Length: 187
Image (cartoon, rainbow, N blue to C red; front, side):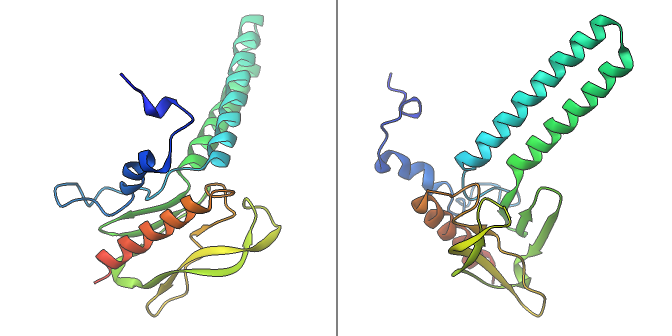
């Protein structure tokens, strides 16, 4: 029984059905469910894994401190570990989410939802973008939402972000998916 998802030598034809899942769903699927039209990138997943590893060390330290007899110190370690775990979960959930209700941009500490009726256009532009979310900017591409009669939404996705750095094909597929959702539901 071949397990192609476990091998590193997959080609684009094998990945094409998985990439097709980013397109708007078929009529029999639940359109009201929020879904991310792309997969989290390796930078985002790597940082999340490191945060969870840190949380496991802090929980292990909490256990050692509790066995040593200092329950308040153990409680502080458990609280820090819970905060690190919550940060890791928020980091992995950050990004663009779409449904029949609209477009949702989830940040580390914020969430903004725009109904499809307020979206005038979704387009990809060439502009200075932040490199991995840091203050340094580089020239790159960004997916921008133009709103009808309102302030413009911040940049949704960039090709130098944690999901697409070094993955131009994945960025192009994500742009197409977000623009496809906008074209289907913006009526």
